[in-house]
Image (cartoon, rainbow, N blue to C red; front, side, top):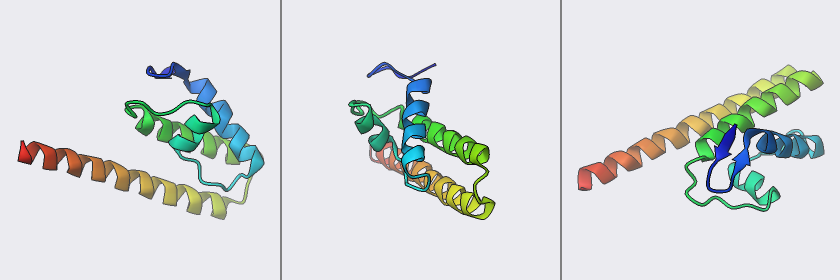
Length: 103
């Protein structure tokens, strides 16, 4: 599936890059910009970044499930990541609302 139409990046390419990061250090923080940098691409319109975050979350969960990592650490990390994702979505919504109010 094509995730980024600006750079023609597929979901599998993103998953492979994330898995490579996780194999280096399974507890590192992975963000869309880091994934794009590793693929020697850059976010252009950045409309795909929320989808990339979802792919990062699902790939990280699958990676740790397959490795049978310590459940307490995985849950804590994933909860923090989900909380961060929700905060970012709320901030985006607030920004859109502010722009609409001023327009």
